Each structure stands twice: as C-alpha cells, then as structure tokens.
Image (cartoon, rainbow, N blue to C red):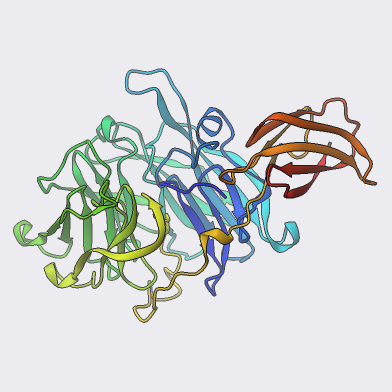
Length: 444
C-alpha cells in the first residue's frame, strides 16, 4: 500500500464502495493491491519519489468517470522531471492520461491505456481540477501554466481528449508558489477559483459550453506569504469561497458587491499541536458529500478542520478547528475530488453521517512487479513496513523451477535479469522475510 500524502485521488461506485485509488505512483484496486499494469508516471520522478511514498505533485491526479460506460475511467496525472532553468531544478513538464477498465483483472480493474501525453508543456506542480461540460457527458480539465498567467484547458470525451487550448488571463503566478496552490470549480461549474500563497485568490467565471475563462478578479486578504501551502473550496450553493492560509481562514461572498463586507475573517489558528510537535494549521480544502467542507492541517496529524454550514454567510458557517478526530495519522492528505453529480443530482446530501470503516492493520500488502510483459529486467517492489524480500523464484507454466535468487542483503526493491528466458508465461514466487509467499504471473 502506498503512503498517500498530498497527491491523493480515488473513486467509489454509486454505492460508496471503493474502486481504485492512487498516490501518483501506481493505481491500486479495492483490495489495496497494485493493478497488474498499474504503474504510472515512469521516469526520474517516479524513481526518486515512489520508493519513499507518493508522487511529489500535490493534487496532481484526478479520476474521471466515462458516463457512457460506468466500468471505464480516465486518470489525469501530472508528470514531473528534473529540469535546468533559472527557476528551479524540478518542474511539472507534462499532463498525462491513462484509462482504467474495471472489466479487466477479474473485475478488479486494470489499465488499458496509460501514460499518454495530453499536454507537453511546463505547468503548475499542483492545481489539477475539472468540471462537467454543459452536455453533462464530457469533462473540462484545467491545468495552469508555470510562473505565468496561462491556463491549459482540455475537453475529455468518452473517446479520449480533444486537442487542448491555451488561454492567458489575469495575473502571473509567482514561481516560488509552485506546488503550494490549489484550484477548484464551483459546484455549478460557473466559477473557477485558484488560491495562491503570495497573491491570494484568483477568481474567474467559466463557460461550460466553450471552456473559456473570463472576468478575472484578485482577492487579497493580507495573510499572503510564499512560505506555506494554501487551500480553496466553494460552498454547495456556489456562492461562498473559503480561503485557507497557514494560520487564517476567510470566507468570500461572490454575490456581495461591497468588498468590505464580502470578505470575512472566520478564525485564526488556536495553537492546537498534535503530540507536542505537529501544529494543526490550515491547508488544502475539499467539499464533502455531506455538504461540509474539510480542511487538512498541512502536517502529520490525527485531526481535520471542518466548516459545518458553508452555505451560511460569515460566522454562521460554523467553522470548527480540529473538529474531526481521525482514527489514524494523516500526513497532509485530502482526496482531489470534483463535482461528479453536476447535471444529475444535488451536489451533496446534508443527511449523510460520517463514519470510519476499516483498520489500517488489516491492509493486505502486495508486491508490485513491472514491466509486464517483460523483456530484460523485472523490477519487484514491496513496501510493507518492517518486511523485505528474501528470495525470488521464476517457475514455468508447469511449475518447474527455472531460476532462484536468494538475497543476503534483503530489501524492499529487487531487480532480476530475465533476458535469457524464452518467450512464454512464467510465475514469480516471492518469499518475504516474515515467510509470507506472494505468487505473480508474468509474460516474457
């Protein structure tokens, strides 16, 4: 199971049952196992990040259903690489897309298309979001540019992406804010908000038919600084925008013509610290299916903040610091969701009751094997804490042992040279330090 931090995307079926999730390194199924062809974002960034946790880019992945077929899903995921320019040494250089077919892998799902280049230009290292097209079938995906005022806008259809368009509007994005901002659409899809650490809120209107941004506005609160990440979320009725800085929370009324009364300071951090170390400040935000807004802390914590009545103006929205007690540690993570119900159902249901399901101790860890089919090198990764790979055997289709590698220096990553194998189907038998055995099938 991957360590999920700020790159967090998942989706459930219409009954709330988990289908898949990802931290940007691979796609895992509902049993917490990597899908057989589930590796995404291969490259230097993957090699650098994924052996330690999730892929570096906050809010860098989205899962979008394809309406005509509920078994098909598009995965939009930002790709980063090491670069040589005057701004920084790493950057998000591409937007990729993959496709999950839930009919594959005995109904647990697998990738039928992956790592296809959608946009091959430098982009913000966060800020990936989407809303439905006015036809309620397609999706508009927006990925802002890097250190400029560009916005890349893509129409995703059931057959895949149409050619993206590029729009320049409003203020330039400050390069030191890269990776610290968050973007979202209003639930009705008519407004687009981008919260930036140094320049506050960028608020724009959005045309769901043409995919065009307009009417740029910049809302400044006085809490701007580039040394932290920020968050933004709309109320269910699309009227109020909530802005989170490290130590302060604001509400902005998009229907109030008076700038003085439109912006309300809701609260300042109350000093809560988890375990005497982790300050529970404010960070990225997300509207939940129960019509409440949840705000992560930005550090490792067992709490989240909550806005109970976000459709109410001012302090009547009932913002509560550390109002949610989590059953396990959360490291600055919150799912990157969009309004999947636009055009079909109410945006949320205030009658829903929150509950926690599952025990982290019950997670079944699985080995990740790639590439498959394999040509020369086979990589085996296994990330269960305090457990390592002791030996790996290759067996043919009849169960006959072909080769075995026993490791004196055990680790959670191993590589086998298989260029001497003939073409065919083989089984990989992995024995772990705790004597558990994992069996996988590969094609050569």
